[in-house]
Image (cartoon, rainbow, N blue to C red; front, side, top):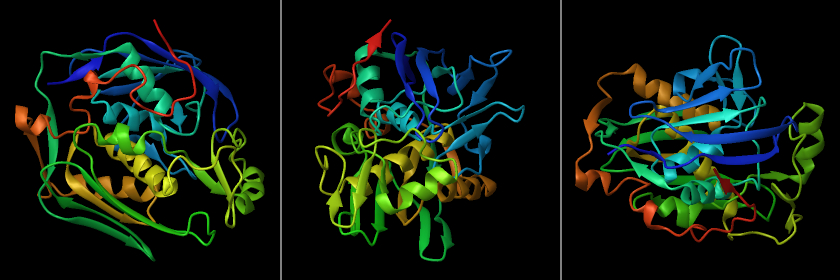
Length: 314
């Protein structure tokens, strides 16, 4: 069945790249509404559907454009939180051009959703079943969607900094695995890249408190890592959020090496460009039980996460 929130939940913070303060609220929405952003700071409060075909090229984040001049960026963490908690319908109001970064992970969003409560709705849920492998390659980077019964993710990364190095991980995303394994993993960067990013107008809101910054073998952020392989876990978190822009749960195995936001979006575009590669499928109870958000409503208010930011349901 489809699901939404029981109550409105609010967040506030600065955008990672713009540095612009923003307030964000996630509100309940009716069946078949999907996930939609509303820019409440702009005239007419324009709507921006959270869908793969609204993604526009952007560096180091996922940016949505409604085609009429309204955009919202860095949507991947809140989208991952919604997918990981099984929320299919929500209105997200934001009063700025970028989603607040909070602690750099999806954990504050997840904790907020759990605190607000999850409302099961009286409407069947449809999923997207991948029927044949779709793959993209660009140099050493590649990504593919392989047919599967539910979402699984394989991801590998390689960085010269010894604090990251080579990391790879496979996760079956069924039954709350997103909350347990990925949600608290933070965005990361190399200290050597910070100056260049800021010169390019990026990472203006980044701090040691909302990103893991590494320099060679050293982790500069206070408290160190939350996971030994936090970097690859965060890349998988991003992938969950970017795949959520399909507009429904995906039944497939997502495999990637050195992939990022843009490649995942191009992979979705390649999938939907081929009508023989996928089909809609109504979720039976057994299939619904293998989706990422299954059983999440039973978690406590903190969802067992390393969430360090208070939230307030209304």
